[in-house]
Length: 337
Image 1 (tube, one colour):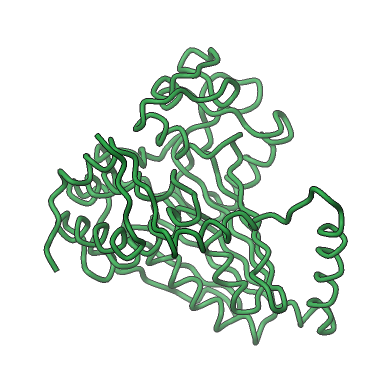
Image 2 (cartoon, one colour; image 1 turned 90 degrees about the horizontal axis):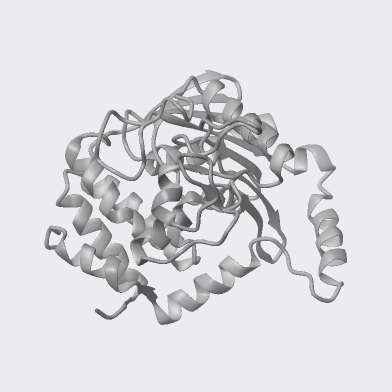
């Protein structure tokens, strides 16, 4: 088997057609395909094409409602609550971005809670979209159980992505995006699909033993970044993403990787800030000064720079889909255009 090279348009079309053939509306299939393709372009393979088979299986089984239309309720002058209706997270997140962009100019700060949601993909993409509209943004999300509390031996939390973005004058936004585990769980899923070992120190098996077997790691638990301090951050994100949105905690949510069980009903929480409201319109100058001081030192790079380089290369050259995943995708039914 050989790896497959696809242009971004080809990957986007294939994803959309596969989802349409798996009980998903055209509108939702487009938004999901856009998100997975952008993740693949950015080199975030754990949130890209590798998710297509599990997304398709979940839409077919009803674990995800591929026809869901998210509903938005304004619950305060600067607060909104979005019900994802057991559907894919991306339509709900896109709705949150639109509504927050409308609210922030009159309030200075606005926040959106998303409930009854699903895998949110690359959290940096949502804050990047807000930063491109001139806003500073924070995103918190939770997911199915993957991390045990520090000192414990039973999973409680998901890998719980945390993302931040800030607009920059004449440049791409600054984007900081990280999961609370040492690596995103999607990277382990990719390794399992490719039949490759994972590095020591990423995860433990179900008995708490260190493992380099990705399948044993998926059945076990991820290790938090920063050890005990990282475990505290995991708890903070769990509270913001799940308790604050009245969503399911990691230990209550079903897996993102198969079509079995009930909808995961996890949550996301987004905060958008108008920098001009707080900085006397000096934010652009101040952030340029700070980032310039960092970039002036040899050997440094700003967070998120690598993804923009990868994105430009993918727009030019396309992306490479590993042979095992490519074979799997070719077997999935896909509606013709």
